[in-house]
Image (cartoon, rainbow, N blue to C red; front, side, top):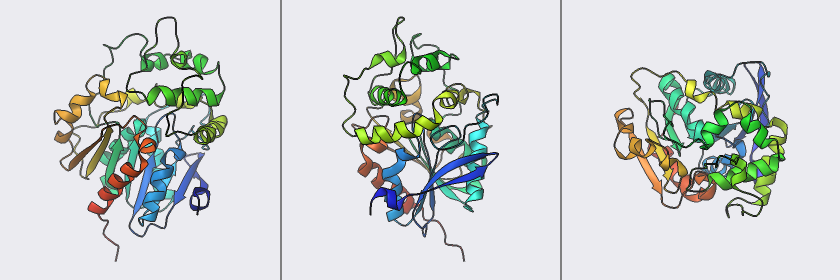
Length: 318
């Protein structure tokens, strides 16, 4: 049976918007909710969804508001980080999921961590890829002016950069750039999308078919909202006072992930800082893994994910 037959799609009315949710599996052993990053969508989790469904779990992968097949919030509406946390709670309630494992990637890791801290009664465990937990707001003051995040924080600049190309070219370039071990940094006379062109090959694990799927879904959503969430909103998140995880936490890092070179990121993992907040913490490293490790090495990530799930069985309700 192919992926299209195994994965079902629906829209849920959540807080005034219709949010797209992909699902697979019956869930005899519990539910796993996958939270994508940028420029990702539910499809980014296709390999993991099928694996956990085959292992006896229910896989749920939403498109965040403003992404993929989910509705766009009104243009005039202020974008706030709490929207994604409130949407996640709404999705669990709408699907009658009392507790779930959360799996987050890229900026999707941040709401996975924060939701587990705010709603520990709704979470069985957290597994995140590429982004460790820290209660401290990252400072990028030491980065050059052409640092991609600094550029994309500037209202209108990324919109103009992206607007020069069609959606497929934008997604292609971002996947090429962010699968590298180098941080995307533009020169003064460049924009971020100038750092790669069509002569730069796609990563070998990312096919033209995959690119076409991403492009078709971003044709609906565009990049207006994704540039606001996360880039112009995530740093405004409210700090959780004295954070302490009450659930197991598992971090998977690709050792070729460019985020290792961001200020402070490696220290959070290797100096034991994250363990101060997560008493039940496990960290695994994938030597050649990039920022898109779950698509690059799906079998390895699936093995680690299912091992984590099996190590923390959900009690069956009487």
